[in-house]
Length: 463
Image (cartoon, rainbow, N blue to C red; front, side, top):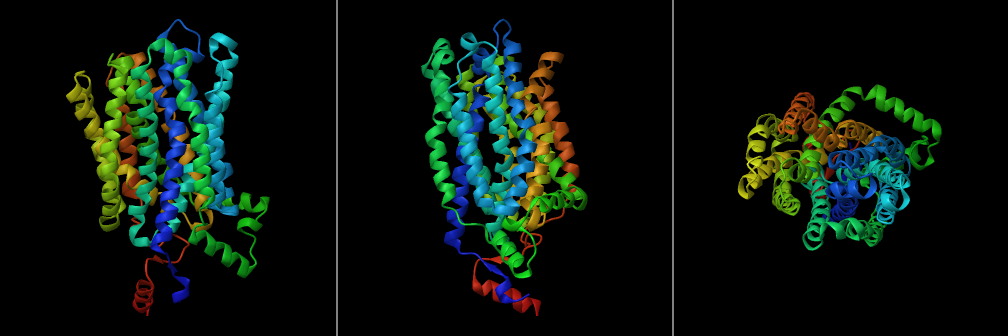
């Protein structure tokens, strides 16, 4: 290894790239989050009346429909990011997500156009899902490839910081609307406002992403391909895509299994807490809908203060200890936390939600750095997008529907807690099997450092 082989990343450039990606991610997950927080109202607007539970289940089934096409988005956008670059894919997904959200806000309700209303709703939700299929894999790959090896955990935590910001914006706007509008106003026109806001938000996000520079790791792969004359990156053809899928499913089987299991544990608990819990509080426990949303918002604000320090901690002690702590926490704490939540009073509910949130942040602070490191640079975007979205589709996106169905079918209000514990057990096995990647170069990439002096130290140590 020569000094010129080592990537020296400029701190200012990294900060700009990471924060622009974070803001774009926040805007994208605002779009995705508002549907979850409007699920009960959307059920009343788009599905036949007569049974409130059936309407809510129909709404969550439509929520899950977006996740059915997420693997297709991952299969399309992931390898595309390995060919044309991470930056271009992130711009495309931003545009598609904003367009799908805006169109949902323009659909007439069931009372106006009948069954065409839920059909159009599902269509645009699938557009959102297809877009989201390329978002996480592309954004986490982009940040991981920009960050210096010794600070990848800290910089990676910015991605989920953006996710929380998006959810907070969505939940805050929905909370405000439910507080100032009555049920009739929400069903007739108020529900449209959060979706229509997606238009200008999408324009801002697209502008931010178009200003990004390509990641240094991907740029080096392109440079090496040009020097050796190999058919990769922007010069790749269809056969290169087929070759990439073979490498993903045959050459990366162990990494793919670990990725799918970790993502399942992470997303089931994430969607249970941040997406399903407001509906659980209002529909199952009869708690005031506005108060439930407000408590979720406060919990997410607390998590914002914790995620960066914990991400930085993983750079020192490793990703595995923090992920394992999160899995163990979700194996032992959901039952006592749900017991607190079921008391129905303000303070016990908040304490229960906050404890679950603080356990969840063990995943939020680590996954954006841990998952990209499972795969080599030349297929990282494709492998991560495919593995992540297969898992999210099977487990994460179906979580609200499965939880609501389990509660309704068994009459047991603790079923969501049992589901969280099962997911955590699967995640623990995967966490124990993964290789520690903190403070190490990404697979298939040279070391990335912050200063020339650090690069020279590496060369001296090698000699």
